[in-house]
Amino acid sequence: MTTFVDRVELHVAAGNGGHGCASVHREKFKPLGGPDGGNGGRGGDVTLVVDQAVTTLLEYHHSPHRKATNGQPGAGDNRSGKDGQDLVLYVPDGTVVLDKQGNVLADLVGQGTTFVAGQGGRGGLGNAALSSARRKAPGFALLGEPGEARDIVLELKTVADVALVGYPSAGKSSLISVLSAAKPKIADYPFTTLVPNLGVVTAGSTVYTIADVPGLIPGASQGRGLGLEFLRHVERCSVLVHVLDTATLESDRDPVTDLDIIEEELRQYGGLEDRPRIVVLNKVDIPDGQDLAEMIRPDLEQRGYQVFEVSAVARLGLKELSFALAGIVAEARASKPKEEATRIVIRPKAVDDAGFTVTYDEVEDVYRVRGEKPERWVRQTDFNNDEAVGYLADRLNRLGVEDRLMKAGARAGDGVAIGAEENAVVFDWEPSMMAGAEMLGRRGEDHRLEAPRPAAQRRRDRDAERADPDREFEEFNPF
Image (cartoon, rainbow, N blue to C red; front, side):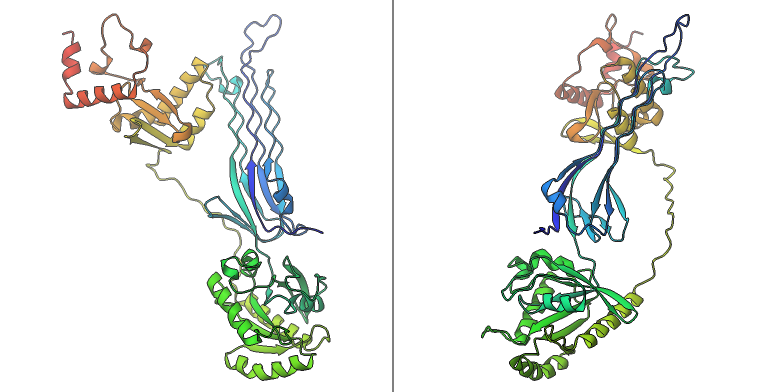
């Protein structure tokens, strides 16, 4: 028997970008062939796609870890690496994508709707692409970016127009089996239905879908029974149908009390107050059931409910119920605003937006640089190659990072961290452009050969300099 799963935690990882290649063209009688290293390939994306043939998230329950393929590294002779293959994950219609904190990332409704759950990493540039008039033969290449990896939660909310709600064994499965071509499991014991069943009903020119929700009991909104797991499946429905058992064998139950209990559970769950309600008095083919239905119907109509007496077994009252539901569904569809054509929204960057920020972290005693470009450039840099590190410094300088650091109060030797705290690259800052007394140092010494100062020492030196800005100039002024 197929197991129904409507909530899973999925771990997705996009493919890493391939590294660029540092290569020099070699050919007989051509000693200066020039750089010919190719670019790395792009890592594959992880994409969720709605497929109406998929009805459950069972596949991801058994194998929750999914990863796209990596891009291939570049090679000499200007050969670029192969792009990684995208990983497509098919999900049911009505799947909601959330992050670990419960924030909605996407609501996937409609055949073919897509959402990129993991973005593949960019491939690194080879030294052929990095060559320029000033750098004719780069001896380095850029590394490929790692692919995006994150944990997401998939929740399935059934896309149906009508939801049948009620106590276990109230006849919801029998009702949907005669109204549509659905064939749910039907038996004479509680909690026969363990999964929501979906059927398609045609009433005149209106075609709508109807779903029966597993039996609700008191406390369902707090987790009792199966209600809490499946109440989410009624959120998208246009109309709620209370199926009441008028021939129940339990002496402590009656249809009106059942209705009040289910309404209270729906109220506590929340978000369903605006949905129209219809009451269906089922099993009126039984004499006691018919008598009870005639007794309670005036009370229900006085409350404002539209009441129908039906029998799923004897096929009584089904046509009137089907057309009444079709009318409510058609009215709900007409009241919805028409979907506008897709519009392209252009949001230009502000004229003073540099694309990065510089802040001082008092706890770590570093100036922290955050921004898409600086952090991406750091990830692409091979710090074992001095030329690649110099190229990174040039890029940061052209972006204006050094100017921002100076305005923030950073001095030579202060710690600078690029990136988030957990994976930042930290170094002692040495400005590439200095003037005046800052260029002077101790005679016979090269400050570039000194070991990096610890954070505590940097803090003491900076505090002393700020307290007496002229101290260092007077001490080392040779004039």
